[in-house]
Amino acid sequence: MACDIWRNKLEAYADAELSAGERRALGEHLPACASCTADLLSRVQLKRAIHAAGKRYSPSEELRQRVQKRLPTANKRGWLWNWAPKFLAAAALVAIVFVLFRGWSASQEEQIFGELADLHVATLASATPVDVVSTDRHTVKPWFQGKLPFTFNIPELANTPFMLEGGRMSYLGQSPGAQLIFRDGNHRISVFIFQDRLAPRFALGVNRSTRLTFHLETWTAVGLRYFVIGDADPNDVHRLSELLKIAAQT
Image 1 (cartoon, helix red, strand yellow):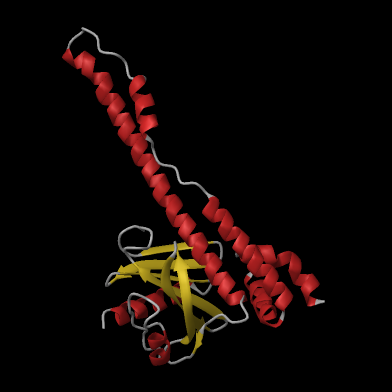
Image 2 (spheres, rainbow, N blue to C red; image 1 turned 90 degrees about the horizontal axis):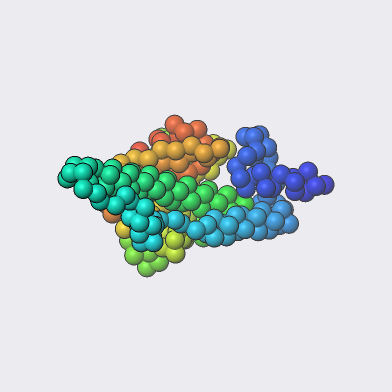
């Protein structure tokens, strides 16, 4: 049975570790197989639970006090001799805090990327990937009115390789947002839109990233945070992102 062939590869599919051919073949199998779809969804939910269980670390007051206690005590060999160790210790402490902050920020981005990748995979594996099914942007956009505390524009896709398939509600950090699904040949691209003040902070400007087989582009516009993610060619992910940026300014 086809299920016997694919069941052992569901974990790799959820982690985006399959080859392009295997990923496409399994993607075609899932909508017709409720058993594999349910198995994949449970694996994705488990991955998200593990991500959420990770604890964030930040320097505590106890750490500062321990560092201060280890500083050399003042002596009577002159002002410079007395204060130099303290200046060096303070500089070292600032450097440590900076490194920890950079690491914490990078960890945040990794966690958000993982959550978005899981949402993207779960959506494609679902028997009903979208709540509003339409290729008409004038049908999809009004569907979100009253469901979200913000509005957004969907680009005109004529003479482009992209086709809108529909949209659904999504949540990131318990914040409601929109998930739009676009088809690009045999690939699907998810576009997530959240309020920027509610979404976790990313680096200023446009942030483009590639992890395993997924490509991500994120930016802010008119108070909203956009995430575009998919396994399509990175140039296509960027092209769709540019269309969304133009639409956001109209």
